[in-house]
Amino acid sequence: GAAQYADTNGNGVTGSADPSDRTFIGSAQPKFIYGMTNNLTYGNWNLNIFFQGVQGSQLFNATRIDLEGMFDSKNQSTAVLDRWTTPGQITNIPKALRSSSENSLTSSRFVEDASYLRLKTATLSYSFGQSVLEKLRMSKITVFATGYNLLTFTNYSGLDPEVNVSSANGPNMGVDFGTYPQSRSILFGVNVGF
Image (cartoon, rainbow, N blue to C red; front, top):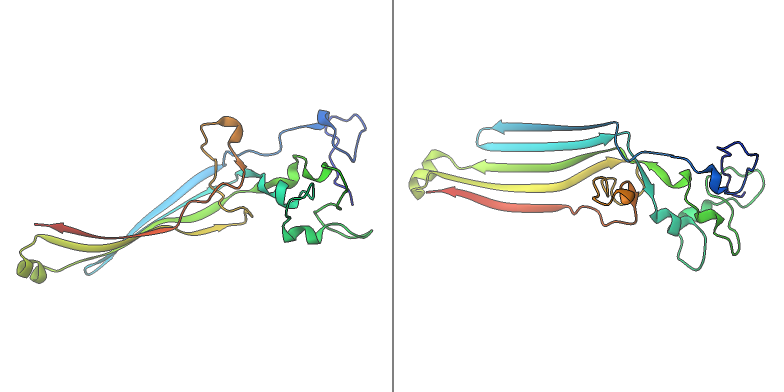
């Protein structure tokens, strides 16, 4: 039930963490980045949508170390209820250890696929017709609503797979320390021309 660490240097020390076994276990750089914009118009209505995504990047979910590390007196995630408890049990969470930080060591256990597809922006607008514009003596009136970060499709267990991907601080790139996710917001507006 104890956490198992690979013997990457071949010195025969297995089972426990050996500092000389450290190796690169993932990359925050995606294999590719993609996006799609579409503009649909029907009569006076217009819908503009922008999807953005990345494929093949990994994030180190450092938040899980605190939530699943079973060390000291921190509150734990309900995921630790599935930890190893009996011989023969198959689980990816090791047994709880008393007075040991072995379960909260940096390892591939906390590296996750951060691929995602996000509806980054969507704008729905309505432009008033010429008859209304002439009555109001205006050249243009358009009302619109724009939504940002409306939907995200991902298997990443953290709050946002897009955290720290372009951090100016290199060592933090690809590390999620419980970073607050990008906000979902909606903007309403009117665009007028006289």
